[in-house]
Amino acid sequence: MYSMEKMTEELCKEHAKLTEPPPEIEATLAVLSGKWKILILWQLMRRECRFNELRRAIKGVSQHMLTTQLRDLERHGIITRTIFPEVPPRVEYALSEHGESLKNVIRTLATWGHTHLRRQQAATSRPVTRGRKVAAG
Amino acid sequence: MYSMEKMTEELCKEHAKLTEPPPEIEATLAVLSGKWKILILWQLMRRECRFNELRRAIKGVSQHMLTTQLRDLERHGIITRTIFPEVPPRVEYALSEHGESLKNVIRTLATWGHTHLRRQQAATSRPVTRGRKVAAG
DNA sequence: CCGTATCCTCTGTGATACTG
DNA sequence: CAGTATCACAGAGGATACGG
Image (cartoon, rainbow over all chains, first blue to last red; front, side, top):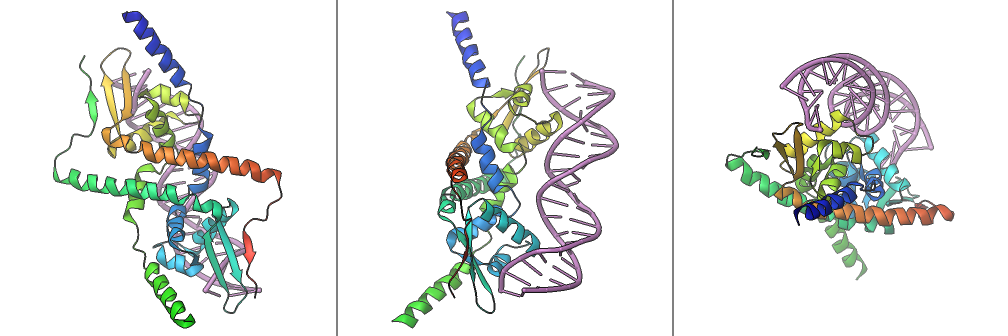
């Protein structure tokens, strides 16, 4: 029956509409937002790093911002900071146990970025209509 | 042999240090950065949405920002925008085929956020030493 | 309903200089 | 080497009003 189907569909949509605000997403964004966080984690995924190693590896980051974002990540329990009482001073940053669980996330981002880039390259060679559609009236 | 092992390790580290800057990561960030993009995509993952549906579902977003970020996503080919020439006017946003490939990414972010929240709850109940270590001299 | 146009705020970010 | 302390600023984001 048409109206019955229609009603059920509507009800489903109504239900779907009440999407609870996703606190998991916001939690993730709270940890990862910041211009350099992901790039820092990308480096630390490969191995532990010293401050200036990160500075050199991450093109364009200032000393100030690197410090700030490292502190953020530390505060969130994502990375550890180990001070070696030597001269000259040495500090090693590494993923914490909890931070290790982010590897998967970063890898997912990288993988998607890779396919996205390939798609972009393909797109530049041929003319594109950019998804703006007008449904038939 | 100690020094041999040490040297090999050092060489590996030297090699690892020359991490090429990851363009895949930057590509992903270029698409997803923006205060509301992920939340928008989270909604569109579940089903296509109209403008004001998104506005209501995403707590705190202004009309201006919602428009802006939707345009960004459209420009990147992530979502489609379909205009229904009715009165009152209706516009549906949906994931494009390419945008579908982001579902996996968003889900990964949400999953991690979920475990992160559980960990945080556990952490607040017991005293914590926050990862700041001093190695023995 | 679905926007665009303005104007304004404020946070994140960057540059520079100085310390343990 | 590995930071902290200031100052300054662009640009992302928000508020409001108007238009198709």
